[in-house]
Image 1 (cartoon, rainbow, N blue to C red):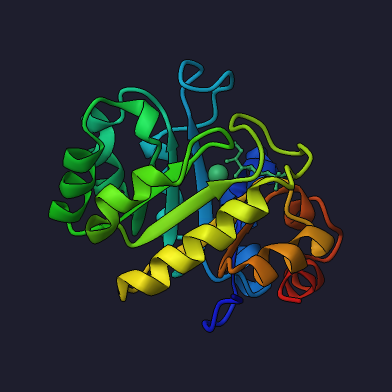
Image 2 (cartoon, helix red, strand yellow):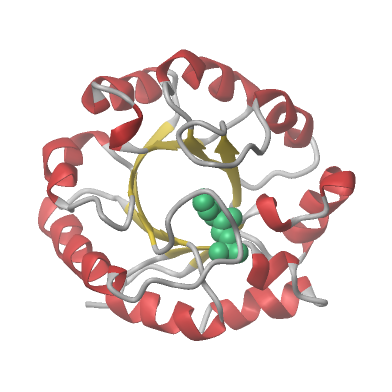
Length: 219
Ligand code: DX5
Ligand code: ZN
């Protein structure tokens, strides 16, 4: 069942020019981005290192759009307050990143932020049912996390459709986000499956015209 909400586009800063991050953030907002997706990688939970809360904080003044922080770090709990203080509006984490997902989500909400749970390609949807009262966002990874520019894993479309049904049945306002290998072509499939927030790195920051790239993802 397709989402009834407008489609929101969350460009991933991972594909931006790291020497000009402030300008990139301002440019992507001007180009029509709805959220900014910030990928936090620790070289431990995933085999890559990106940036931390000090960079998030430095960028906060360059845009007004919500900052969507995707934590790929373990442990995550010791850093939740730092990302909240840095200006995150949404904080999402993977169940595999710590022993107490339920408590971590409670902590994010207690910090006054929206909370998200992220499912790796091999992570089953069942985990969401147990925390559905505590999440504002469910993120389906359509690549294995760690790097931009990977190919979309099509088996995740069924997962998106299953989650759309779970969200509708819950009656809660929960965003359904997809991340990894999203292009103008795969975006259509994600939207048809029920996703309503599309993360895209390469397809936006790698394009010559950011506004055209964002518009092209909306379908
Ligand atoms: C991967 C990250 C993604 C990544 C997406 O671990 O979570 O957000 O930046 O990059 P593309 O859109 O290039 O697949
Ligand atoms: Zn991400």
